[in-house]
Length: 72
Image (cartoon, rainbow, N blue to C red; front, top):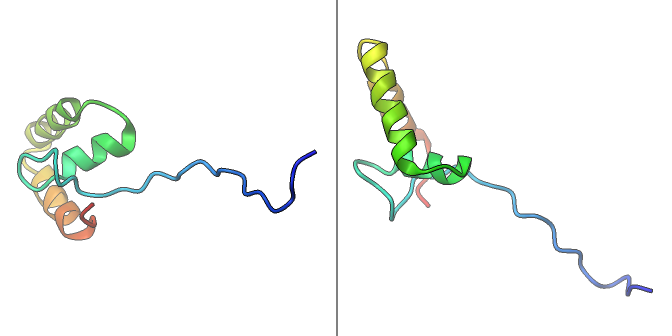
């Protein structure tokens, strides 16, 4: 029988943040990689590819992510 006053460990929810340790420019890709559970290099490659394929449209998106994503 379990004690009703015991707390059950809830799985921690992932929160999106800018990384303070795994950063190249502002930590956005490092934070996204941590959130998604993938290698940060893959997120950086995807960001560079998106910038090239959209004729630079990713640059303002990245800047918005820098301003809107909280630091870790």
